[in-house]
Structures are given as structure tokens and as C-alpha cells.
Image (cartoon, rainbow, N blue to C red; front, side):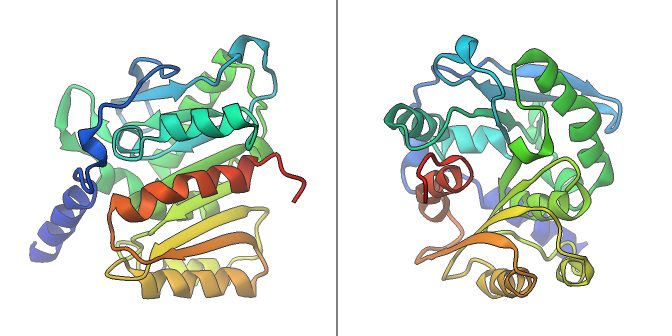
Length: 260
């Protein structure tokens, strides 16, 4: 019980507003309102918001990035502004981004990260059978795994690692910021034992109190298997000072327009 309580404290603490980012009120243009979706796979209702790039009605075959802990990437990560800036400057192609909220939409104080992100097959099934078909039927997406990615941080980064292993038939692009892998202690062994999967991977870590040794171990496993991977370390702890400045790196790596 003590260990479980500690995990709960960490899960709630890591994404509290920090570094002043949450104090700024984000411009929410091009973001839809919260949309409810009832999941038969999970047995409860979730909510999500969609970033719709400029000129959406004229676009087709749009790639899609799904973001776990989506409400915090909007608020603390200010990801909407990053997307606008990169698309407007032509640094990345237009991309549709689905921000999936980890909370109970009826009671926002109820955080569901722990039950969802620890390699939960029902959570992956929710994406594959319910959320992705809904998005693909609503927008002119490129409805193929090669144009689909998942992003998350901390336990959300763990979720991305799980989706890479168990959902590679659905996702090609796997982005993990400071993945907190300890709730799935055999995760590294699973990656080591698996064949090289058809994935592109973004992996990042802080260098202080950020699970960095475990993340470096995962990096080494992925490098040994010769995955296409961007790996970045930054001199920060497990906070938004670490994660927010790397959002553009994630987007440019997967959707960059440069010939490089």
C-alpha cells in the first residue's frame, strides 16, 4: 500500500503547473471543444480535443499525432502555439493532433493515468477500435500506421513505449519524454527480446532526477537494434522546463519538411 501511495503521489505531482508556463492563458484557436467518447473497451467515457491546422478544409491525407495527458500538453506545454508556429513557418507539414484527456470528464479530479498507461491492453484497444476510427471518419486523415504517432511524458511516455511494443501495427511514430517505466519492470526486457519493429522513435530525458539511467538503458537497447531514433538529453529535472522546449523537436523529427 505504501508503494502504491508513492506512485499515486508521483503521478499527480509530476504534471502540476511549474516554471510559470501554466500561468499564461493559452490561445485556444484551432482547438475543438472537449468531445466525449464512450469506450466499450474501457467501460467508461473519455474526452479529447483536436488541433485542426489552418486550411484544414483544403487538406487531405493529414498525418495524426495522438497525445496522452493531452490537457497538460495544451496548458503547460502550450503545444497549440508550437504547432501554429512550426506549420506557419513551413518547418513541418500540417498535422492533426488529438489531445486525449486522462481524467474522468464527469469528475476532473479523478485521474485515470495509472489504470490506463501501464501497458493496459484495454487502453490500446480504445485507440485502435474506437478513437482512431472516429478521428479517421471525421477528418481527411492519412488513415495508415505510417502517418500515425503517439506522444507522452512520464507515465505517458511509458504508455508510448507500450504502444510501440504492442500497437506497432497501428502506430509508426513513438515519442517518449522522460518515460517512467518502473510500473512495468520487465519493459526493457520486452524491448530487448522483441524483433526490430517498424517504428520511428523519439526519446528524451533530463539529466537530474528524471529516471535518466533507466532511459539511457532503453536508449542503448534501441540503438543496439538499430532503430531510427532521435535521442536528446537536457539539463533539467522531471518538469515542464525539460519537456516543453522539446515539443518542437518531436514535431520536426516526425513531420519536418527539410530534405535533411
